[in-house]
Length: 467
View (cartoon, rainbow, N blue to C red):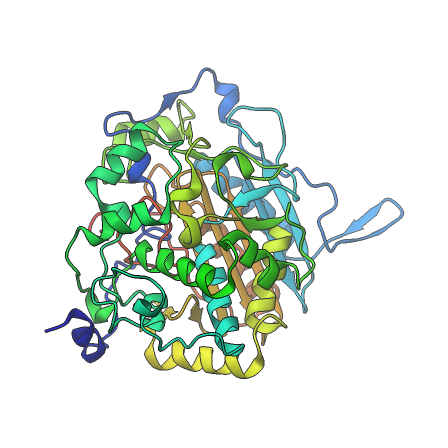
């Protein structure tokens, strides 16, 4: 049976490990197969990250008095504790809440042990959240009558296995069955040996197409190949390179500066100011440090290593986006509940997620370039050096963005996850009748070098079994 026929007939919920880490994976591709980290030169390098922002965004000032939302008093120390516990050098946290007030704050430093503080204007790599941008452009192109999501990919890209039957919508829903190129051993070996290599989309596709078509639970199989193909569709239909299409179709209409949000081409084009990105090096195909190293990391005796030299071209339209917290919040809100997507198109988009999406054990529903939980639309991402998360609830008028310059905790989890959980707890405590996600969502996407599935989870348990 054609794998995609099987996918259409098996719509059962995707089974997950409830405590798996955020976005199951980008770290193993470029991590050393033997090294487990960098020894800390002295205790000063492991100081707990603290707030860098004197007057949080959205706060009001009167003379010498600064008024900030009530939830911040309990939230700030929880964030500082989570960052210190997990060895995160720096972070930016943004909360916009119509009922309880807005707050943006930066924590920690741009480099491990460095003295240069992260600011709220710093730009971080977004990893998987880039997929929401790629999907949004496809929706806009369909709205303009330039393509249909039911078009076969063969109309736009030659040589795709089963391309005459594989639709753009199936690609956007990770239902293609195409092998994810970043799972290839040769790709991983090359990326490890030469992290500065600039990859072309065709190189990535050639790696994928050398493997047989696969299937996954409920017809869902995470594959970065899907969104590389959609990037090529965007370029063919618009006649622009992908970075320009992102700019003209998404960011210019929102008047978002190119230094605050965009699609990277190479390592050197990440705008300043930005932090360096870090990751704990772990054994191959495993994000979890051995117990001894986890204890050393907790004591500040083992530090993550700088992964800023990894060229983002390997992730391209699947994960090479970048943004500041504010720009990401503006973009994400506009996609979910603003002018970027036509209302009729948005209603159809939400209906597709509701009707055909994959529901996880924690009630997160994954669809075409977006996930939902309760009344929140949300997405997250991870790649070597960075971890990201964005959520917006139109009914609540709440937006949350968390950006860190560490990809995984020593336990193999998401550094964003405990922060997001603390935010939702604080908002609920300040407004007992509010309805925020009860727990950070989970994912069972395969571990890979490029971005993966959307949403944070607890970092408390091993991720073995999610691959």
